[in-house]
Length: 191
Image (cartoon, rainbow, N blue to C red):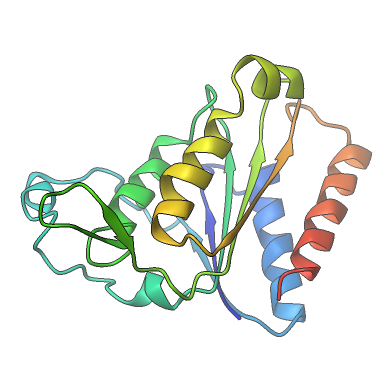
């Protein structure tokens, strides 16, 4: 299965980096073709330029087709202020483009999905807050934005899962290890 892992964390020794590498290893061991994209290491520019915005619906994308070939997408990132890091949001803005991830009707109302090969999207995130704040007070804003705003709009047949490690600041090694085991078990079930 062609897999893209997108890592978004500025620190190379972060728990997020560790989780991305564990996911990469697990997917390779299962025989999948894996690409790891580290947005910070690549120096990815999340800003949509004036020219890109002006040609948003008409300009060809440099990576056109690359995202359309991905069968599994694994996003690894911290949740900051109950949202995506700006760099990951920018990657989504600049990658999930019209003509690549979806088509717009001429009246710009309905979307037609284009990511037909994408079967699995797994979001792996760390949060400083406890689960009850994310789930009960804020109703999982990142989960809802990714699942309904991105995945279901562009790849409606893809299965979406979100694995969240709450209270991750200063997490005990034993708890981090249990989360890694949970991640690995989830990835084993992808087919």
